[in-house]
Image (cartoon, rainbow, N blue to C red; front, side, top):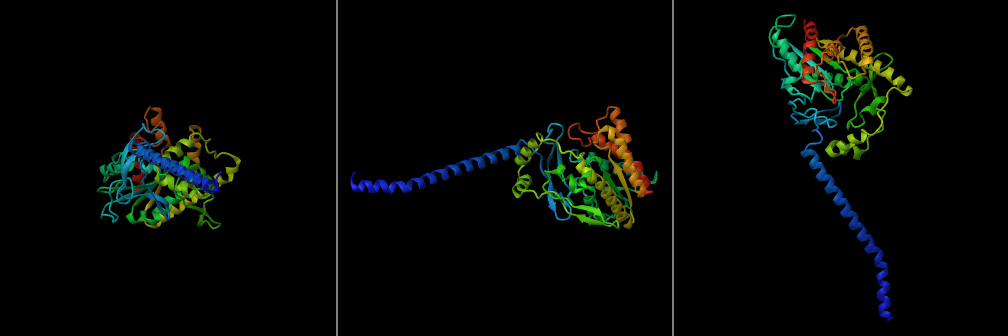
Length: 374
């Protein structure tokens, strides 16, 4: 072989790994771009069909999250999308309710309703909300049964996933501005106790935001309790917040995972603590409401607890509230009777109240609110 050819051939060998690296890099880039394009196309598909509902939550430094003012979109349960679809429109204060001015009109009694997803009630139209129906019932009975003359205004602020601590903070930070005469808190036994203790954070693993916790100290004063769960990985948080496709895939993946168990012995102390913390928070909220010159009452939902547990849990909650002098009403008897009569008060898959359930709740709560207003 001529010397020139040997030199040319020898010079080609060092460049071969470089060319192979460039080819591999180009191939990886093509694969990455293809995956991104596929993910983007599927994201558009999920949004257009739609396969996952619109999100209304935004971060809040004090509360963890709240609803975006004036947000609008379609809401349905991604696990059972054919059960219902509702077009939701938040008001200018970020609540699923009609508009309300902050300044209280002269001579107008006001009732403020606080709670979690049962009060948010994204499953039903605004006019079907139990507190909107309650306003109509109260106004129709003006001057009778202890209801003051004139129109009674009922204002609802509900946020999916909220625990008692967040409802307490919301009242202190914004709810009291409406100068209500009565404050109602809708309590859901099957999840509020868990929402009030950081040991049960695994129940809401897909929540993007971190909720605040409070526990009573030795003197009974509420102090902040830090979260115990590991911080959510930033990429996971980002995708949950911005990608409906990722949230849908996350939901489907969780359906194949074993359910989170809260009945093991490792949760025994936390369960006892959560009851103590919850009653301390309810008492603190009652004290804040009464310090503002208003009345406070707790409405206990029938809940999604096993039927064999409901009566005992309701009795225990009622006993705890009675011991602390907190007015309360249990919806268990009314809802059980309606279900036994064949009324569909909850969506079978989703679990929240149907329009019929909201109407039933409004009628059941009416005498309780009349008593508080009088």
